Amino acid sequence: MNKIYIIILAVIVMSGCKKDPVVVGPSDKVSTGSFPKSLNDLNTILNPAYGNLKSIGLYGFELMPKALENSVHAGDAQYNGDAAWNEMTANNLSVNNGKSQNAWAALYAGAGACNITLEAADFYEKNYAPAGQKADIDAVRGQAKFMRAFYYFQLETLFGEAYIKAGGVNEGKMGVPIYTEVPKNVESTQQGRASTKQVWDFIKQDLKDAAVLLDNKVWGASEIGRATEWSAKALLGKAYVFTEDWANAKTTLLDVINNSGKTLMPYAKYKDAFNGNTANEFNEESLFEMNIDGDNKGNYGPWGNNPNATTLNGVIWSPYILSLTGTETGSRPLGYGGNLGVHDKNVTRFGYPLGYYTLVNNPAFDSSKPPTPANPAMIMDPAYRTAATAVRTNKTADPRLYVNLVQPWLDVLNINWENGAFQNIPVSKPDYLAGAPNTYGWGFRKYAAIDYHLNMVNYDKWNWYFLRMADVYLLYAEASIGSGDGGTGLEYINKVRRRAYSLPINSASARDYTSLTAATPAINDPVLGTNPLRYERWAELFHEGHWWFDVCRWRLGPQEAAFYGTARNLSTPLTFNEAKSYSWPIPLTEFNANAKIAGQQNPNY
Image: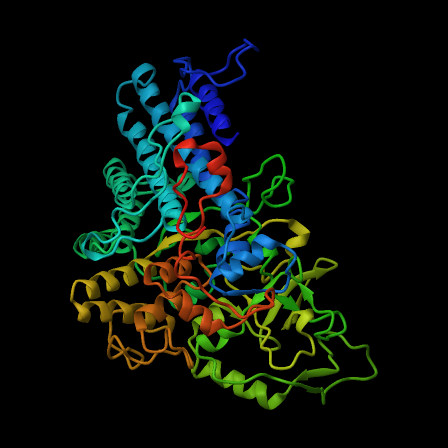
């Protein structure tokens, strides 16, 4: 049905408005009607290529909180009533897993929107475009090619059989089906799986084309979220790293570093760059981000009559604040409670050196007044609080711990909670951990609501970074190391680390790693403890949807499962099957719809 819908959509878009009610199904040919007739029409056709990013199956809702964050154990799910969610946590998916199936369908829908745009651009240029508009049409083509590459990048890294390694290893493994044009009939929707090399070559060529088509294109303030030449080159550099083509990766990424005009934002901005402060959007570090308007168009997040109007990830990973009576029991989530908290192992992975806290009677409690968050009967042990405050002040733990997470009792959130008045209310453990010994109970801060309640507005208000310069620096470091230039690699790792400690990024510091095997902040961590490149990618890009792909391409699955050990929504210890789990299964729905993919499932599914 999805494929038939794509054909119907293509016919409608390419044929324009018709009064004939008989034409309601797929046709063998696309009409050469009257749409698009203007550049505005063409941009209208392009817009779904961007808007599709906010679909329920992608960044609108499911992909991050219900799939990737469980797969890498950034989150620890309290809720265990969703079998597909539990499978993600266990890294043991079934072929009818709803989260992977919805991602597959949404990614191909996005790629299909790009193909429609490219054909519409050709049609418009041939039939209606006035002289002198070629550059504008090419800019549309460039965006469509960038977005198509973006969708196929996601498809290949999630569903491809294996990553290409240096020297061409795995080039003949199974990639994903490639559609280069709008299907004109049902037969043309039947595509077998291309090889991994074919898919990556397709991605790279689209990005090269996009960079040329968008060369020197500068968007006005009302169009600032559109892809640019540097978006394309950054993703191209990433594609080279992910296929271990170190020489091309270095050249491409260095071009971005030297010529894009982008750099790392200062730490003060960085700490406040993930929670909806509009002053920080499209900043000096951002290469491509998804624009989120603080308006759900009357819907509940991505659902309703405008399904891609906004996103609602934060409703799942919301932090908690103290109850109305100042207790952890009955603490209040700033979204939909009881779903997904922070896995405790992430706290020590950022280098937090203290154990668990206890509650003690509040010596300042005023018994003549009712208990409230400002007058709690019990508080964090003051000695622990003093030690925890010193960890922050002295930067004993990685400062990015406090960019990403909020700490019970020490962090205070300014919440418009009751009667329209803002109140400073301490962060709490989730109510389901109240009284539980040996738990940290920290909450998410990055990409979480920290100054409003999501259930009151039903939308996220923060833009989502897909590509930023910290990622580029670390990719360039990896490419340099891969090509034998460890010194340059170490320097670019240290640039990212210096920013985390609010230091000048281009000057050596006492915080620098002295070697590629130096100790990192990660405590008792056999995966990241003596690997600065891995640690910096984990810490810098935590909770941004990148770590799963690093785990898969570096084949860290069993080590990560052993490090995290357990998950709240599973009754057995975490394990990882290297023979299958680095690739998600091709959904059963695809086998039911696509005869040419028969016998091409990923191994061991």
